[in-house]
Length: 474
Image 1 (cartoon, one colour):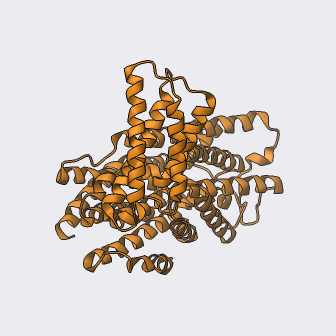
Image 2 (cartoon, helix red, strand yellow):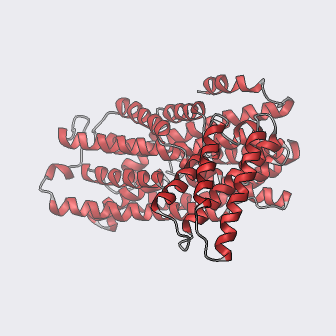
């Protein structure tokens, strides 16, 4: 995993101005982000295989590689919307105007704080959210950044949006799994669905076995498409912090494509009827932004940070202004014009919201390999310790159906969720539906709850302290 990451990255180093300790720090960051995703693999993905292992649907020797493969595919095919949402938590635009060492401090603080807490909870066998850990670390490093540079270090609007997603999703997971379990309990006539396996050879019937394998596959795939993107976002944060001129915008998009999107937008504006000064101001602002973007497009290159920064800012301004016009209901826009504006904004978003294929491949490989190692501690907790009795087939299936659906929808909306919390809550919900509150293991739930409560503040404090420490030496 690590040699692969370095083998892909090293060819870029000869084309950069990084030297001395910054080059070393850059390589450490690359290794750390691969390590974070590796830990994420055996920490979070263990949730996906717990149900098939403890219901005897698959032996670990088959379940682990199977889940790892689908995690790999999930990262490859999941897009980058969640990754870009993660990136927007930190002050990317400000980082591009500061020395590279500042970005190095922020990136290292986020990565090491996340890895330390994830490894600690894994060692104790406590299902803990890598998403909570990473987001807490980004907030902590952002707050330390604000302290040192007296500027906005955290996008609180984005933090609130992500925080809401992380809080609401396990509640929905608990409720939906309980409802699904009650439905299965009172509607289906299959007693075998509620069987608790005992002994090595007590395997589920073929139909139930296929159902459990399918749900495990879906959770693994959607885990990759959501959690894997968080690793992609961290990787892009590293590249933009250290090599902004090269990676702050997607230089592979032809200038002709960008010009075409700008011209389409200009044509819509030219025929847009405005009825008051406020509407006129919005339209004129966008026209001005288009002219500035055309100028910065002609000047941008892969070596000049200032010109690349200007181009990125202009593209972001146009996207924001287009979305403002789309929301301005008083403007007389035909459906075709609205579609044209939306298409132009989408095309321009590819300039700033992207990740190279090799980045996605490194994260995919790290997550997939991590899934195959160190899985057992978390699997034992999920399969044996959340409830006071062994997991039955219906509980495993209902919790994973809900988890896959929740994670998949969140990925579609570009929102990160915690696989750990969604699936753990789903299993708890299915067990409550099976036998009431007395069917839950209070000691395990307390451990999970304590980890849940502590993760955010610990990650924030740890990342802030690490930022301050690195700031002294980098």
